[in-house]
Image: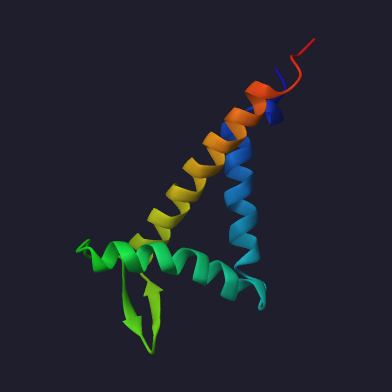
Length: 91
């Protein structure tokens, strides 16, 4: 079995690429906003420790970034798993 055919590895690579994009000055704002909005909603619903509001932005804490990375990994895993199942069967 090809290791790149594993949805878990592809999801891990997707999260790693997103983390690298967070280091680039222009794309880090997009990554922050993509992580910030769902965490802000969860924090508003009463989930403590995800971050704090600051000047109209929600700054994620370490727990918030971890939750965002886990959610991204799960999303990528399920999307890539479905794509792998619908692909051409291995010879």
